[in-house]
Structures are given as structure tokens and as C-alpha cells.
Image 1 (cartoon, rainbow, N blue to C red):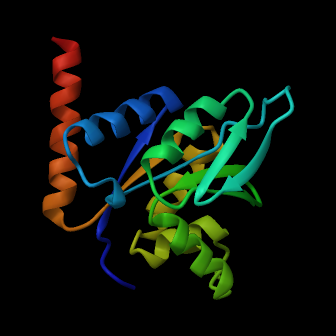
Image 2: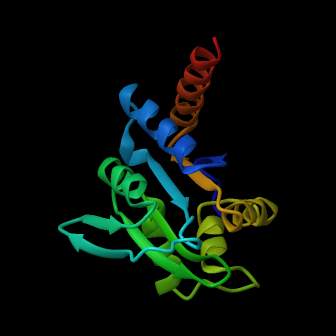
Length: 167
């Protein structure tokens, strides 16, 4: 198992996740070092669809504006139907990790496809269970990839932003 070069932040709502990503973007953080994973489609009552236009995915539906905005900021937009989670949207370098786990048939040991991808980037199994549980209850997982300085900088930017909001 490799050492994790990623840190994780769980957000309760897509609004909080989007605000964090936009805050990092405005602070000049490298968007190529961020991934977002979330769902929130299960209660959709209006027609929705996905299609690709170049490397962008277009979305209609209740969460379409959110995912459209996120996919405009982060690389590699994708949508998967994952057993146990349902329809999951994501973007960023983590997409390639998930695709690699699926293509390489690494989904073993009772882990889901998402769990296998998380373990590939060095997440301990107890944390995998925590993150999967968060996604099952419609939370959003922001992954900060990179070295310890990148991770510390992202957390500092977000901490400063939340302090300014509280003040």
C-alpha cells in the first residue's frame, strides 16, 4: 500500500463543497490537485441527463447548476452508477484512480469500487468505511491531492475563509 498523498474534507451540502472549491480557486490553489465526489441525485423528480461536449459534461436537473459549475472548475468530469451508492458525480484526479480500479479488477476484499480506489491512494480501510458512509448519506468528499505543503495550504485557505465568514 502506498502512503496517502491526499487529504479529505467531508462537506454536508453541495453548497459548502462548492464554496470551498471556489475559495481555493480564488486563492490561486491549483485546481488540478482537487477532486470532488458526491451524489444527491436520488430525490430527483424532474428529467435529467448527461452528455459530453469535449471534456465537459452537461447536466440538467435539480443539482445541474452545482455539478455544471464544479465541472467547469475541476478536470475529468464523470458520472458513475456505483453499487451501494447509486449515481455518483465526480471530478478531478480521483476519477482516473476509480477507472483504474474498475479496469484493473482491483475490487476485492469486500470493498466497493470506490473503496478500492480509495485504498489505491493509501487510505486506510477504516477511513474508507467512513468516507463511503458519508457519501451514502449525500455528503460530499473533497480530496486534496499533492504533497504535505499542498494539503496544509488548502486547509489553511479554507480555515482562513471560515474565520472571515464567522467574524
